[in-house]
Image (cartoon, rainbow, N blue to C red; front, side, top):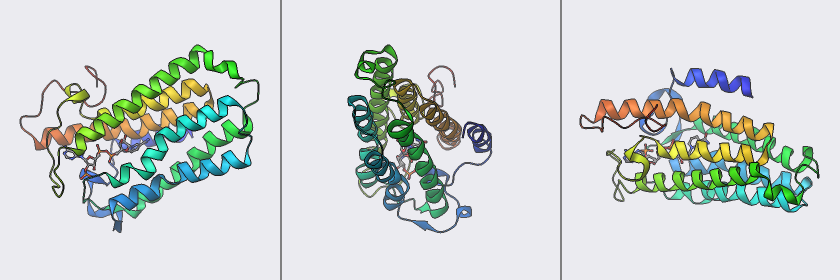
Length: 240
Ligand code: NDP
C-alpha cells in the first residue's frame, strides 16, 4: 500500500481525477453526485461495523477509536453527500476506485484495531499516552478545519447555483484547499493516536491523493480568476 501510494502520488500530478471542476468526458458513465459520494464512502461504515462485530471490540480504547472513526465517517456517509450544492455528475469509474480504496483501507484499520493489535498495546492507560493525546488533538483540529472549509465552500453557492467563486474567510486566507489540509491533518492525527502501520498507511494515502489534487485546484483558480489572491498557497500555508 505504501509503495502504491508513491506511484499514485506521482501519477495524480499528471492525471487529475475527473470529478467536480475537473470533470471531462473521459471517465465513463456518470451518476448524481450525492449518491456517488454515498456509495463511494459507505464501506467505511458498513465494513467497519462488520469488523467491529466479528473482531474483538472489547476494551475502552478500541471503543474510543471506533467513536473517533465514526465521528468522521458517519458525517461523510450520511450527512455530507446530502448537503453538497453541485450538479456535476460523478463518473462511476471514480466511484468504483474510491469504493475499492475505502473497502481496503477500512479493512486495514478495522483488522488492526479489532484483530491484530494486542490487549496490552491499547490498555486503558493509552488514553494518557502523549501519542494518543497529541494524535487526538490533531484529529479534532483537522476535523474542524475540514468541516469549516467545506461549509464555507458550500455557502459560496445559493441553492440552485452551480458556478465557481473565489472562496474567502477561514483558512482560505492562506491556502486554496483547507478542506484537504484538514483531512490530511485528521489522518496524521489518527496515525499518531493509533501508533500503527495501518494508520500510517492511511495518512500517506491521504497525502498522496489530496496534495496533487490541491495543486490542480490551485492552478485552476489562477487560470479562471484574474484577481485570485497572489499570496495564497495550494495546501500548506506560506510553503506549497
Ligand atoms: P472540493 O473542494 O473540490 O469540492 C467540495 C464541494 O464544494 C463540491 O460540491 C464543489 O462543487 C464545491 N466547490 C468547490 N470549490 C468551489 C468554489 N470555488 N465555488 C463554489 N463551489 C465550490 O472537494 P472534493 O469534492 O474533492 O472533496 C469533498 C470532501 O471529501 C472534502 O472534505 C475532502 O477533504 C474529502 N475527500 C477526502 C479524500 C481522502 O483521500 N480522504 C479524497 C477526496 C475527498 P463541484 O462538485 O461543482 O466542483
